[in-house]
Length: 282
Length: 262
Figure 1 (spheres, one colour):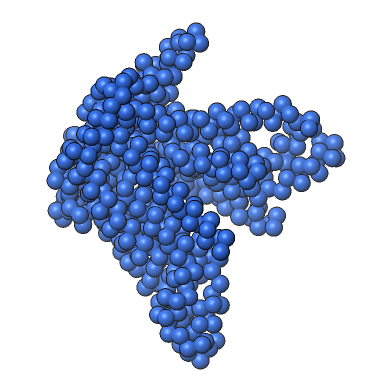
Figure 2 (cartoon, rainbow over the protein chains, first blue to last red):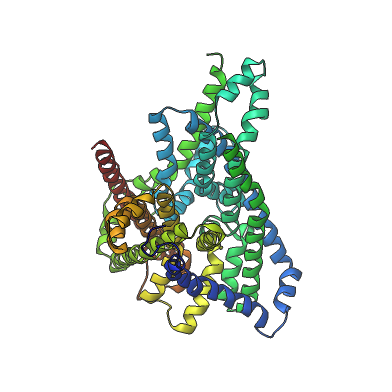
């Protein structure tokens, strides 16, 4: 309320966001618009590309497989991240730093190079198979299988699960658990009735991010997978670059886009609970 | 302690997960010293030929220079644009701010290949395939969310009354920005710039589509080398990137701690 022109009353703030929005429109909105347009217009106007997509068995198989791989990766991430994030939230400062470092170190090597490491580890004569053989187990085919793709993708996406989970778990008051136990509750009951519900918002947030990112994965399935583990992204790339069929590739892209944002939209009410919960406990 | 068994189980589980997280990184380093051209682990023999190949082969060193230049340009452009946007959002408050923030973060969510195909289509029509402008625009788009998040987090804890105080003492808006606001949100801007650099330096999907033989980024070169044959030069590149990142982060930690102590 000064006598000088108030800096906040003007449209200034909106102008500040314009350059960023311009980049977004030019390099994201227009390209996605072109994709949508081509899916309806090429080779002729109509829904032919979508009819083709849903009537071709391979496409449906790959679409379902994309869902199934993304689901498995999400489940594996939740199962691995939960104990890890819990340990991070209760550890002392030094151990916590070490645990955080282990989460961050994978990012220090280029993403494509990391996939190379998984090729080396998973190949038929690779480390994992030799360890299995020396322990008296049978050789397992990992490279070019869904299992191999799932293992590699889970490692790449695990940090995106651990971090939101850790953020929520750090805010949980551990005295609640002591209170429950001092009132005679069994540790297992305490976990399921108190700790798990309080940590669920973190699980939802992390699982949503992991699932969405997994749906669109391209490099890892391409290099670790085979024909039996192709995901939707690879199919889109083939349609556009190998077959030069922009219409069909576009239709596939639109399907992937709708699925991705559909999942995000369906999950966002659960993610919003996080703010209510944390707001309430404060 | 009556909870020793669960505690032991938890420690073991975490140890396994930690190994699983870092294993790929530490497979790469010994591979880069392999004696023969194969990707069998543990590698046989010892040689520095893959490092030599990286530094003498114009394809490899050329793509490193392209990626480094590009990442610097992207981090400058994305940091300026993203910081402006973050400040705008912070001052707007209300619903509009939330919507613009959500919109600016969508490049992180759109599936990489769909975005890449779209950008490729537009670039073919506008002759931007394989150009610096094309790369900078595409990578800036992907880097903006990280800058907006990093600077936004810093602005959220920024005390706006400091700006009002400066203005009431007669400072112009520009002076206020450069002497009060900028120094206080500098940590957020720097971490945003770092994220932008890494995003560009590591980006592969869009780059694969808009690449050209004359202008190829390092990740694209790594990718094509991996799909062609088993060449441990990729492991040497990975180890060098790992070394560089460790140095930068190590120095950052040392300086960060010193700064805090003062």
